[in-house]
Amino acid sequence: MSIANEDLINAAREARRNAYSRYSRFSVGAALIDDRGHLHVGCNVENAAYPLGSCAEAGAIAAMVLQGGRRIAKIAVVGGIGGIGEAGPCTPCGGCRQRILEFADENTIILAVDDSGEWQEYTIDALLPASFHLPGI
Ligand code: THU
Image 1: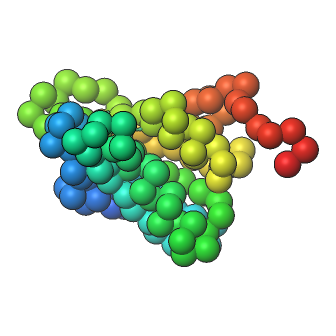
Image 2: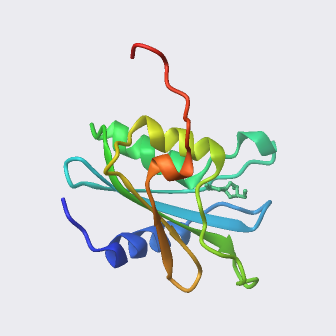
């Protein structure tokens, strides 16, 4: 199940190359390793009807679930506006923090990566403290 951070980040960068971000120009790639050691990737897919756009993390998580994965061991997120460059690490948006939480545990690692390939490492509790859970489930 173990994968070097650099390899996961490279997979996210590759996915980002296919991002469909014609409205925001902010392209994002996500790559995750699931509990079985399988790799899944996603990119953002925007839409002329703006709210219909989907995030890179949502794509990677959907791919994982489709393949039977149920736990995220590690996820890398890479994003920014090409050519602007001063953006810091791309941390998951609020909605994607909740999406990650659904398939995370205390060992899940989230890598927020900047354009130069530097990353910061987070747990889901650090990104989404006091998070929402359905009681009893
Ligand atoms: N985006 C992601 O794909 N993931 C995030 O966690 C942050 C935002 C996308 C959505 C939209 O296509 C673009 O980045 C700008 O918000």
